[in-house]
Image 1 (cartoon, helix red, strand yellow):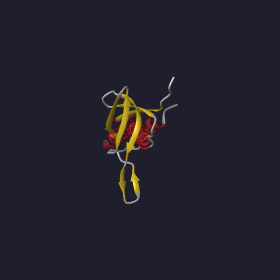
Image 2: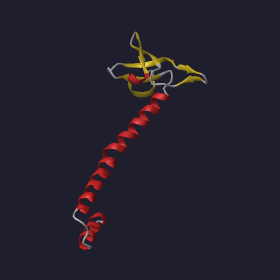
Image 3: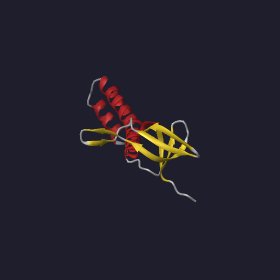
Length: 118
């Protein structure tokens, strides 16, 4: 049994389709493969990461782009006309060991959830 795309190509060739048609079908198939295997999963991953950053709260453990692991102790959100607005430019204060660092929300690469003392 032949697959559906291959069968449609055979039908086009048998019907006397132009020589450009199989090439266009191949280009569309390659684009579809790239979209579903590379582009779409990356977009979903980026959206999920941005959602985790928007839901960041005090007590969450984070890892920065520089590799610093710390606990969120304060989030300074920008304020607009309708109140606080979550932005990637917001300043987040994290505690790492005995140090406190102020970073931008966009500098956080991983959110691990609440810190568990143990």
